Length: 431
Image 1 (cartoon, rainbow, N blue to C red):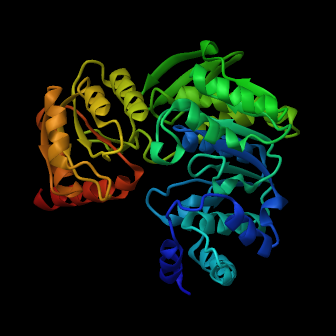
Image 2: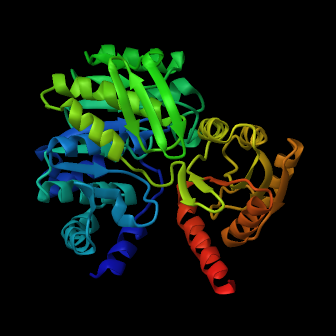
């Protein structure tokens, strides 16, 4: 197989969430000689913040000198982003070679693995071949039945927070979702909860007690932000002062607090992580599509907020960086999200909005979204595609001397960046 054929094979696997369970991934890994058993893990689940938390932890461990694997989802621009060693994406050749090893096994199974199960098996084999000491392993969805949950005895399980998302698969209450995400808690292995919902904490505490697993939480009262702007944030947490992160978003210091608590636990669990490595790792961590500036004139920001909680966090960040100034917004939403609550939140910071219909069978139409936003006083214009919406959004931002904020699923990121690049090329040509 070549690279294109490899991706076609991976994506041709079933992504239907029928017959949930870990039997398929266990069968696949057993035939591979259980590559997942050769490494130590930090397992990270939760509704929001998993990617940023994973990135910061991986950078800190790398700064300390560990050979670190990082597994995340979904990818933003390129499939290979999903699995990295020391920050380097898996190469096309490595992906092809490992998939050729996994494919005959998968094809011989009576109950074929899903796409995510296949990708997870490829990642475990990649990390084993790459000699990883520690893998920062992000949960795909949920936790209890997620294919990453085949690992035993992680150094630490982290649940960043709980809110309503993927309700069709995980449950329609915070408590039900918390139970699914608490499934990553293993016997006698510590768990860190970064959320503040009392109902979710109660569920997680019960599971931790049943599994004799120490439960830790984050003391956000000990978090203090000294300064924050579009260049980064300086903050302190507990006794650590003068910490800096370049990741933008008012929520990132909270993610960093989770990471700092995790480092303390990991040091007790046998890793050796110095204060210098912590500071360097936090400062160097990057994560695309999370309040990322993708154009400077006008300022264009992309944030992968796609549910009510994520939008609220993005709105808070916008207020922090831009004060009372109203922005132009590019947005699309799925019909199974709380789009009324999302529109209400956006009305606090948006003067104009350009809506699209996401490329998804569950998409809310651009026209209907326009009508919902209009009910909250936002002037909204439905657009045929991302390119049209971005061009109109950029021109409106320039006219109003403001910024454009692009909000929505990470799957729109590539299209938005391409549209920005096309706009810039057009501007250069016309000038």
